[in-house]
Amino acid sequence: MAESGAVTTSSTSEREFVVPLSQNLQQRLGDRQYEKRKGAALEVENLVKQLAESKAPADKDAIPVVIDLLEKKFTRSVNANFRKGGLIGLAGTAIGLMHNAELYLDALIPPVLHCFDDTEARVRYYACESLYNIVKVARGAILKYFNQIFDGLCKLFADVDTDVKNGAHLLDRLVKDIVTESEVFDVDMFIPLLQNNIRKSNPYIRQLIVGWITVLDSVPDIEMLDYLPDFLDGLFNMLSDGNREIRQAADSALSEFLREIKSTPFVDLGPMVHILVAQCQSKERFTRLTAATWVLDFVVLGKERLVRFYAELLGAILTCISDAEGEIRLVGERANADLLALVKATTGDVDFLPLIAKLNVELVSTYIPTRLASLTWISMLLEKKPTQLSSQLSALLPTLLKTLSDTSDQVVSLNLEVLARLSTNLTQLEFSKVLQAVIQLFATDARLLEKRGSLIVRKLCTLLDAKSIYMVFATVLSSHEDLDYVSLMVHTLNLILLTANELEHLRAVLRRSFEPKASKDDVDVFTTLYKTWCHNPVSTFSLCLLAQSYELSSALVLKLYPFHRVIYIYIFFFYAFMVSLTERMLHQRNRRVRGVFDAN
Image 1: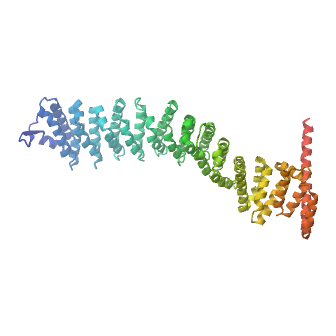
Image 2 (image 1 turned 90 degrees about the vertical axis):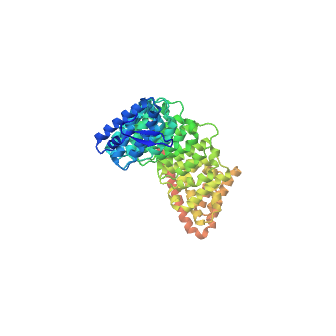
Image 3 (image 1 turned 90 degrees about the horizontal axis):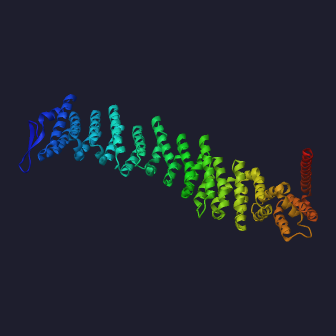
C-alpha cells in the first residue's frame, strides 16, 4: 500500500518500487512545529500498521525501506527538526508494528541510541522518548540490546538537561520492569558494563548503578552475591559520595548483601578480602567503619576458609585498632581478638610466614595499640609455631631490638616477653647472638642504657634464667673493644646484681662459689663474671664481697694500692649503700610483720 503522491524508485531489475512516504508527509515530519511533526508521525504509525497487516509481500518489504528512510534522511540530518521528526517517526513505526516490532529492532534501535549523543537537548529528549515507546512495544525482545540501552541510560542520567534526565528516569523504570519479569536476562553480559560505570564519580550515574544493583539483587532467579566482588569496591566508594541519597542507597545495598552473606550457607569470601582491606584505609570515617564491620563478620563467618587471607585481614585490623574514631577502634579490637583466637585454633600445616612478615612491618607503626597488638600476635605465634618463628630470627630480631627504644614502657615490657619467649626456642649460640645484639644496642644508644638498661636486664632475668643471662653478658663483654663502655656496662650489671630481687638465685650461687663443696658450675659462674668485672674495680671488689671471698677482696685492695684513696672513697660509698639497702630491707620486713599481726 502506498500513500498518494508517494516517491518512486527504480531497481536493478527495472521493477518500479514505491516508497510509501510522500514528499508532503516527509516535509511535515521535519517541520519546525511540533504539532505538524506529531501529526505526520501518527500517519507513519497508521501507514506502517497497514503495511504490517497486509498480505502482500511488497508491503512487507516496504517496512525496512521506511525505517531506512527515517534513519538516513531524518535522524542523521543536519536539521534538528528533521532529527526530531525522524525519532518520533521511528517510535510511530514501532507502535504501528506492535508485536512484530521485535523483527525490526536491529534497524529501529541503533539510530535512536545514536541521537543520545546529539548536541541539541531537545533531540536527546525525543531520542529518550522514542526509545521508551520502542521498548514499551517490544518488551522482552529488547534484552538482546540491553547493554547498549544501559550504556545510553548512563549518558542520559548524566545529561545536563532536566527534561532529558526526567525522561531517562521513566525509561529506566520501564527497562527495570522488563528485566525483573524476564527469565532470560544475561547477568554475565551486564557485569562488565556495571564494573566500567561504577567507577565513575558522576552522582547521577552512581544513582543509576546502585538502583540497578538493588533491583537485580531482588530478582529471585539472579544470584548477585556471585558477582559481588566485581562491584563491591564501587559500592564502598559511594559511601563517601557528596550526595546523601547515594550514600544511603549504597549503605542500604551493602547492608542487604552482608545480611545475605550471613544467611547463605556458603559464600566465597576470599575475593572480597583485598577490597575490604583497602577500604579500611579510606579517608572517610563511615567507609572505614563499614569496612571494619565487614572484616569482623568475615572473620566470624569465614573461619579457617580464610587461612590464605589471614595476613591481609590482620593488616586491616591492626590499622583499625589505632583509628582516631572510637567506634572503629572498638570494632577493630573485637576483630583482632576473634582473628587471634581463630589463628590460635587453626589446625593443620599452615604457613604463618606471611603473618610474621606483616607483623614485622606493623611493629614499627607510629601507633602504640598497633605495636602492642603486633607483639601479642608474635607471642602467640611463638607459642603455637616456635620453629617457624625461630627460623625468622634474622628478620624479627632487628625490629624487636629497635622496639626496646620505644617510648611506651608497656611496649618495651611486652617486647621483652617476646624476646624471652623467642630465646627459649633457640640454641645456645643463637641465644648468645640475641644478647650480643642487646649489648650492641646499648653501646650505640647510651640514652637507652641510662633510661631502660636496668628495666630490660631485670625483665630478661625474670623471664629467663638470670645466671644464663649474666654468663652470656660477661662472655660477650669480655671481648668488646670499647673498654669504657664495658666498664659502664659492668657497673650497670653489678648494681642490678646487688639489688634486684630477680637475681637472688644468682647471688646465692656466687655466695657458695668459694665454699669447699661448691660445684664446678658455681665456680665457673664466679670466674666468668670476675674476668669481665675486672674492667670496673669497684664492681670487682663488690663481686668478691658478694661471693664472701674476703681474702680475694683484701688482695684486690692491696693490688690497687696506688689508687687506695679512690678505692677508700668507693668502699665508703659502697658500705653506705649496703647499710641503706639493709635498712630498707629491714623496714619492709617490719611492715610485713606488722601487717600479719594487724590481720590477726
